[in-house]
Image 1: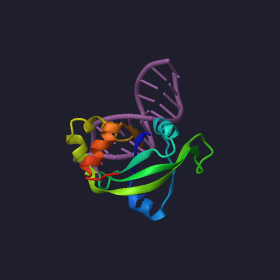
Image 2 (image 1 turned 135 degrees about the vertical axis):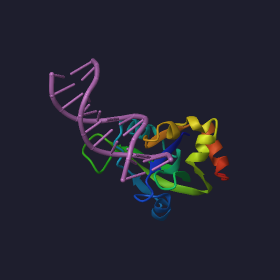
Image 3 (image 1 turned 60 degrees about the horizontal axis):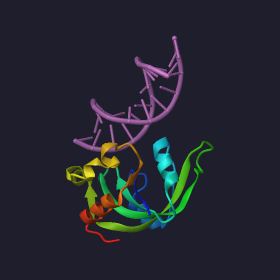
Image 4 (image 1 turned 30 degrees about the horizontal axis):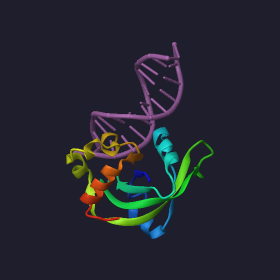
Length: 136
DNA sequence: GCCAACGTTGGC
DNA sequence: GCCAACGTTGGC
């Protein structure tokens, strides 16, 4: 089991949209590092959904329901995965909270805010759950 | 809306 | 293969 953070702009596709849709194709990643992370995802891996620009907070939890396959939107060598919602965080965890945490301030979401798919250790994952006052 | 940080592109 | 120029992203 691995853990990840997926970034999305909520005015394009929000966690609420994911809850409504029950499942979505996570496509459009056009960054090599992010693509490689997508390809390392395994079935059942847990992901946090982070809202960039608007909110700037981790709002919910999802899971990988289909591992990497050819991005349907392009013929070029990019990947997509399928994501299903698990549950919303009881309390969203803001970027500010992440930055002020001695451990979490070093996660790639904070250090490299442009990376749209980034890995998370179990420890970091648990800490964020705790900050979000949420149990899986 | 601005700008810093980062990634990509293309000329040499 | 280097690096300047450019485009994009996202925090502020």
